[in-house]
Length: 306
Image (cartoon, rainbow, N blue to C red):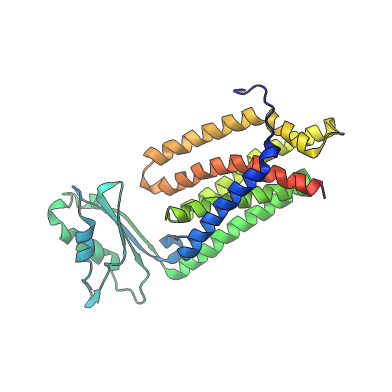
């Protein structure tokens, strides 16, 4: 399917504007992460307890916060008013995220849910099983291990991609691909920091999916570049890459749009569980398509001229 038959766009003539745009996006994300003390990590990495409950009607978050100032558990008094408490889905659902506590009392989570039920006893569902929507618990040691494993997964993926592209094409193409993938991850992470979205294991999975998607798009362009380099031996690399991008533009647009619409539907109606995953994928599809043209290709041109 070719929705665009013939184009002659000078993509490489716009690399300076693209470089400025990319720099601004990365700087904005970096500044946000510095101001926020790093990306906002979920309990998957920080450790703690997440409790999500469902009431029959909308409830007041501030009343919940006020009631949680003094919670008695096994003779100890805890103040959870500074914990993260927010609505999700609609105003009848709330999620409470509590950081790990040293020497946590037994049945800690159960006591918290009982306290929540006591705040609005008339709004608790008749079937008590419908009250607790989610109950997650991760220890600090497990969280630290997951953080290390997540970082290692991303770095390993980039290293293997470097080897693969070097073997299939040339080293200069591999550097271009890695530059584009690193660009995609940094910008997506920055967007999450700016919007104060949490980075969870699902988001790390989205990052790795973005890496695969972006690489696939880049490989298609590089494959066309390799063919045109052989056919157009006396043509400058910049012109070869411009021609290759224009020849694969229809395929790039069709692939990007179909992928984007799928993750957009997931984002809109997929529910809270995959909300951040689908959002990361939407950002990744847009940035991945952009970087294949305006990051990977200019790096190849730069290295070819040296």
